Length: 376
Image (spheres, rainbow, N blue to C red):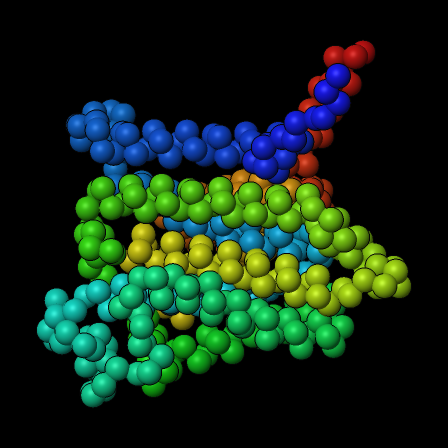
């Protein structure tokens, strides 16, 4: 008799007991497929046709969902409330934008094949050293992850070794992104100053304005979100993840047991920063611009609101929150621009006081309520 048991495929192990994640990713995948089909195949006069603007909007939402996922990994599972994750997102975005700027060549306003237009305008004679290599897509992609990872490692090393925690850690992460915002606003930094980087032409030889390229970016964004989700699930399902959750719930007790808490925090923080950087790089070609405003502490605070509203510590709740809040932002900033920020702040207060587990927690409560009513 064969007593050996077959191990489940790794993908099934990762997604096991994660019904919510399976539903959210499957639903989002179906939406992406339909949007791609309706945009490329259906005629523009069809009532089921999806405009390129909607494709771009959905791609932006998916990029934001990956960013929210990155924050939920550090906040929801190891207890680090980062108010500076927008910095990692922006650095990844700038790295991707630098590659796109190098692809413009002599098609810019000043027809300079070596220097981007803003450098010509500022009378720069040669390309700054930190722009070298960004004409290579492989190098640029590596920088998208490497630069945020280095910043996260250096910042985390000093912060976690100093045992800075709680609100103090949140404040210094906010100070970090604010300092970067001020630096990138300077014209002499070589990143376009307050105008940022824009006027991109193509990516890997494909016209950024074509419908096919927009659909391709949408699909790549979705694939990146799925990969990011699987990586996060793999981490939290592992022994490493269980230690991280223990640190979140009782850091001093875990430290007393002999675990090097700083190393666990640093690892998760760096992985999260890399995911945020990829999200930024996917955001830029779809939106068409990156400027220092993305470093704004307000953006990082809004990111925390996305995760809180969706449901912290669930991963898929962060995805839901990113979509819900950003769709609401798109609608209300055009319909009621004067009250949107007040409404967003009020919504965060309501969620914090009455729905501490966010939308995911509310759904779970409603499910339990309906089940209890059915039993009666």
